[in-house]
Image (cartoon, rainbow over all chains, first blue to last red; front, side):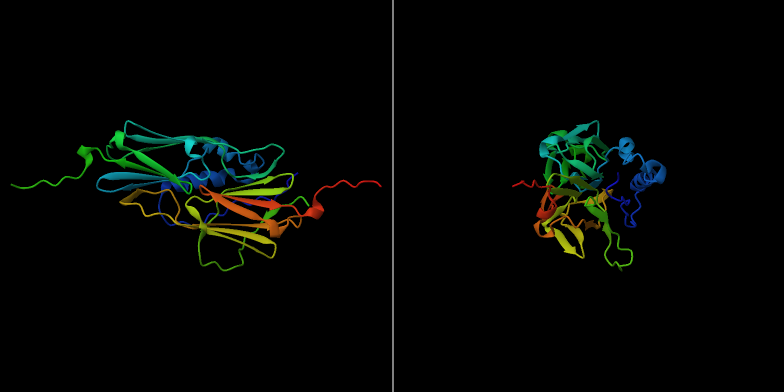
Length: 153
Length: 123
């Protein structure tokens, strides 16, 4: 018995041209079509959870900002390998039993998100903070990737 | 008595501000319901919860700290969050409580006393 009438979240029109985000939205809306809707939020079985990631670049640093709402700090892993930054972890369902889920749009389980960094970074100096559900990873550039001023003698 | 929330979509109301609809989870517990909504980047003072005409509206305004440098890759959306639920009459609206922790809003909606199951003693 359905206790709640489900409406697909309506996504506000978004002007920025990010084709991966668009593709993700298209996939999601595909799985929300009537045929699939009988399978519930089956889309997440296929697409998993791909947290939104923004990357900033300044003269000396790369900064990755990842939206990870409702996590515990201990459950987030950050690794750097071969110029690829990988954020992985697990979001646990906090349950005391005797509850009945009426609507589950939130992804629970493990996730993994990688991005190839545009420049070389100093792996030993990477730092991260997690606040308000946002993970910020600061990656200082490797010496050879920093912009240099060359003086003319 | 079973319907907690019917989600309302205000298509008739003119919208000036753009919002995104964040993912939410609704759980029924013995005493009521629990709603969890993902609002990364929203702090306690950016949260606006209102209850009107049996509709519970949760708006989350982000207070994102400016990041040094230029944006080279973007997946996040700049809009604020909004989600609206129509509440079941069994919910005691005066006792709704909310908290936000690491961008996750948790609303606790207790059922009114008169709808809770009770035992009647035969005298």
